[in-house]
Length: 231
Figure (cartoon, rainbow, N blue to C red):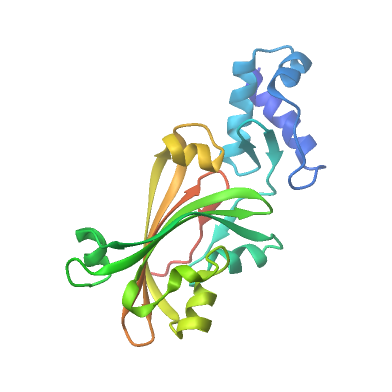
């Protein structure tokens, strides 16, 4: 006989197939009583569904149907474009925005002279009101004068193009895995040590200048990368 958590998973999977995206699942306590098992067993079943991108949890609110992971391809698109392409409404919460002296790492990533000024913007990105990503973006201050006077809660790529005539034409991205902890877990509404994708990006404009360096932490239960390889 299959383990109890797998039987519960299959039952919940059948129920999820008839539900809509962002519908709430019963609380762990209710599921434990319904299936006459411990809450630990229920968590095992839910963890399997979350790992498959079928559900997601928001701390203090509950567990919801996700409609599958958001799959990111290799085409250079903004977060806003990605979400709207999936009929989801993007939004941002600006956590901080400041002008600072570039650290050695940031100066190197943007090919700037030591102690150059940069803008550092930290944002929480959401889709349909659900936290998806925490990003930190560094922009050379000399390319974007008075940037902090503008609304930074919408698409930065659009702002860069329309207000400063700087368009990111291509980018080098590096994707790695990590476990979310501390403030990032709290911001994204996931358990501490939940899996995540860490994406670092160096954006280049049409003149060949490095105009953006960004580090983004994506929820592993809601995001993946998909691409085609050839021999």
